[in-house]
Length: 550
Image (cartoon, rainbow, N blue to C red; front, side, top):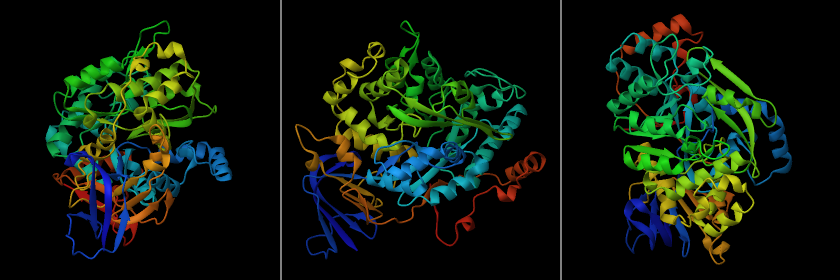
């Protein structure tokens, strides 16, 4: 089947296309070169004056797993309210089924989403949930850094090759796309009643520091050739003055690639009467000195949400702020800990206004959009359905000023945001949400519109929302067209079809002897048998589920 998108304004930074009018051709689910005037077309879509981009990619969104399930169980009233009202505006991950997640992402033009925190012991549950999400291709990052076996190996002075084999075995067994490190060693320290844990603090009973864990795992990912660098949730999340922690983490990377997650929560200084201020400029100064570092923002937006994290120290520290007043903290003996705390971000709040402003500062002050990524750390900073609102804030300086008039002015005075007039361009948006995101993840078959790419294509219509300038919130809320693998799945914001997606994975090579070490550990400490731990093709029936990337 040959499809033509005619005369669209194409934004594809990987091909240096920044709104040039042109045609796009799709054959059998793949983008192809112009087949010539004599080609027989099966369908033609007029994209004149419309924005054409690759399908969007979310590199960090909590869409599956134990914390997501717990949030739904903790807040059943939100699901009931949603089902009764069928509102179009967001609340949180607690409200939606897997079907809702796929539909809402697709309506915004997204085609690939990464779950950034998969506890290995729960990998099958994560993949089964992601398999139930329609339309989207998915991926997950396996969590290491608080697991007992890794810390035992490090305590015993295991060689780097053995650590590499363990990491590779884990990525294969869990069908992960990469590695996630959450406050390295912090969850185990919490079990020994530690309530604050820095980069050079020592994990009780194991004798290794957070820095050592981080560097050991980073070296493993690099030496194994895993495309996505270690995806790091730093120490001291949410604490005033923690900008020093994230800068120290950049330096600890020793020039190797590292991705730092939801960095808005680490851009905090200690200035002002309340001892809490923006340190976005200081963070970005360090970011500019370390070209090996990539970051996503984790933007805060106002309203009700629920925070979920494997960083039990951070979650426990904020449990008294739970709104509504209930929360869950959990502990997995051999692998990690975490917590679920509902929270409402309020416009009148000094702290919440500062968080909102810091995220926008990071976006608007950054000089390298190809290394800075568009996230809200869904649902921690805001639900992913708030992305159109965030885009309008970043692309419309007048609208941003209007919003600031209703916020806490004392907090805004401690930021640079009121004086920032920059507006992100469509090309910068395409870079952060498409081309650079695919490159960061090692997904070279998407994020661009060159021949050979999978035909994930989003078309937006700014003409329907024209004024002095388009209302970019409305433009990006509902795609005019969305093709997934060449199949039209959304038209004018309405879902037309719900094809199944694939899970994107890697399979680094390892010495099979590591399996004996892992089995011995399982036999001693796990109630789960090792044979029940790995994710297998047979768990998903006859339909193919996984796509392995080199």
